[in-house]
Image 1 (cartoon, rainbow, N blue to C red):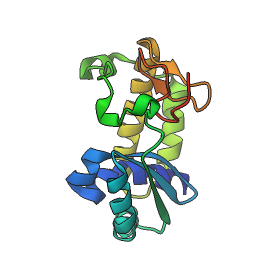
Image 2 (cartoon, rainbow, N blue to C red):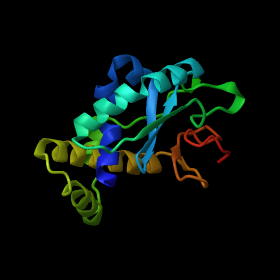
Image 3 (spheres, helix red, strand yellow):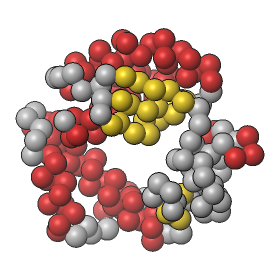
Image 4 (spheres, rainbow, N blue to C red):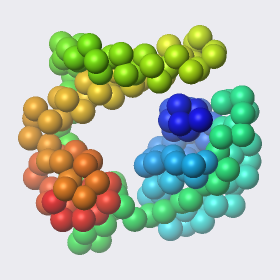
Amino acid sequence: MRVKERLAALVWRECVGGFYAERTLVTRVERGIMWVWCSSPALAHQLSLDAEEIIRRLNAQLAGDYVKEIRPTTTGRRRAQGATELDLPRAPQPTRAELEAIRLLPRAVEAIDAEAAHIEDEALRERFRATAIAQRKAQKWRAQHGYTACRHCGWLTPPPLKHCTKCGRTL
């Protein structure tokens, strides 16, 4: 079930459409509950109204009853000094070439393959695998480029921010 929950975050954008995809971010999926950061309180309210239909779409895409609840929020994505996600300075990001140059340890790839093995649909399994590998490489790149790991949640926050962009706590 955990693999399907992670997949739910991957298919979020195509299930919610462009409007929500540009203004929301799935921050966590656990025990059938999906936490979604929203760029405004009004959007969080609208998402709560649309949640039933979105849950139906997500579960149809995943071919099962994996998402049971959506919890929209406007906190946890850098709320210090009243900033919103859109106010944040652009963090340094890796180029495609930089990501391709990063090599993961064999045991990291084996762990991803073990998770992916539970996915029956071959196309979805390969999509999950490619995304998980890209995420691991991006995480490694961030650690090498001055991002700071939050001592509370472990999220890598870009410099020069002093508050975690996930949980909002001081680094």
